[in-house]
Image 1: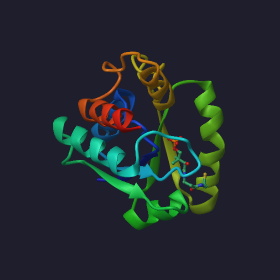
Image 2: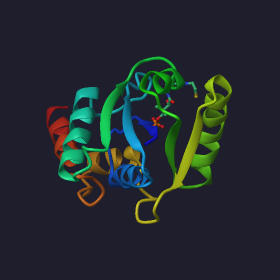
Image 3: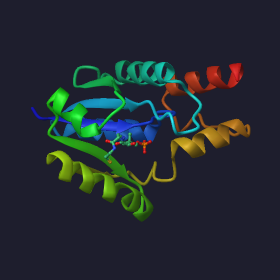
Length: 163
Ligand code: PNS
């Protein structure tokens, strides 16, 4: 079984992320979801809340046997891949815009350490969903309950209540 890393901010972890996780695992991979610190991003959920909500989601979805959650240490993603014995990075593509963002990172990771990136096309059911739009819609009073797994929704409501 090969190991792949699914990195991201996951602020919050959406149903699109969950679909990607499920599909990567269904390809026969051990999947490590690597939650980044993203100090430069103005987010909502802290690292602990993001990690806990993903762990809760994996348990709920019966994925905790093949998928694990780790914090992505500050530093290079390829170093983390080496540390956990991962052969590749998995990322989702919703559109050409995503590809434009992903391509230089994928090329750089390959240049640095021969780490390949496997792209999965986001299912059209989720291709309009991004964590940033979910945060915005939620902050403006919109309903995001059909875009998030339960534990992410709970984390979002808790964070919004205390902020
Ligand atoms: O979900 P995001 O915020 O788009 O995820 C971005 C992430 C975590 C994949 C990206 O920031 C990343 O790979 N960070 C690790 C830093 C790194 O290795 N940079 C140099 C090579 S591109």
